[in-house]
Structure formats: C-alpha cells, structure tokens
Amino acid sequence: MTYTVAINVMPLKDLLDPQGKAVLGGLHNLGLRSVADVRIGKRITLQVDAENEEAAKAIAKEAATKLLANQVMEHFEISIL
Amino acid sequence: MTYTVAINVMPLKDLLDPQGKAVLGGLHNLGLRSVADVRIGKRITLQVDAENEEAAKAIAKEAATKLLANQVMEHFEISIL
Image (cartoon, rainbow over all chains, first blue to last red; front, side, top):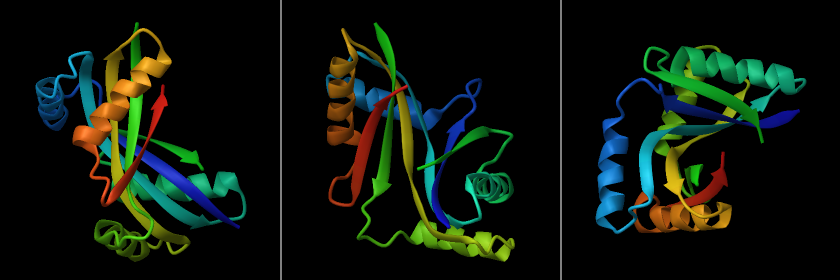
C-alpha cells in the first residue's frame, strides 16, 4: 500500500534561528505585533510504498536520518497523512 | 493567551518541485527505492498572543498571506499546536 508521510524538520529549540528572527522583524514591520518567536523549518511529504504504517514510518525515519535532517542542528517528527 | 501556531507552506500540487525531485534522486541513490513523489515546503511555528484560537489563527493567516506564502505557487494550512 502507498502511504503519504509528512516529515517536519525544525531547528533545535536551543539554537538561534536567524531566518526566523528576520521573518519576525518583517511581521512586526507589517503591523503584526502580537507575534513572537518565529521558527522556520522544512516540511517534506513523500509517498512511501510499504506493507503497513509502521513500515512506512520506518522508511521515512531512515530518509530523515540519512538525508533530510541534520540532527546536530535539527530535530524531526514523522506523521502519516 | 499565547498560542503556538504552525503554518505549513507547500508547493501547489500542479507545479513542479525541483528540490523535491533532487531529494527523491538522493533517496533512491541511498537505496530507499520505495519512496516516490517527494515535495518540500516550509513549516513555520509562531507564538501568537490572542484572545482565543480563532483570533490566533486569523493573525497567522494574515502573516501567511502577507509574507510567508506566495499563493501563486504555494498553498498553506494553519493549525494550533
């Protein structure tokens, strides 16, 4: 069966996120002053051909670990859509 | 109250996603052959100070429309975490 899997890759909480800081400045300049602490990561969706959800998640985890996420600076979470 | 809001910005389905195509090639080279149709977007989390969830979502929608998403090429969805 084919599963649609989403992988969210976000910068670790303890690290600075300069891109997020820049966007936060932009939002404030647009008048959106009630926004704080913007963090920007990646969202990757993939179609995975696997026997069951667990197997699909395992493949997505391998993809995230080997290629998509840099675990020194980022953490990821996987969900089936 | 402060809400954590996530905005997922993804390329429109009908458009090519060259970054996704490149990653798909990389995953196949790594031996992950059961993966197909990789699409890469952004995930933005923000802290929004608002009276209720609806108001927080409205602010996030304004941020996405005005700055974060290019609606010619991308669509976005908003969720409260």
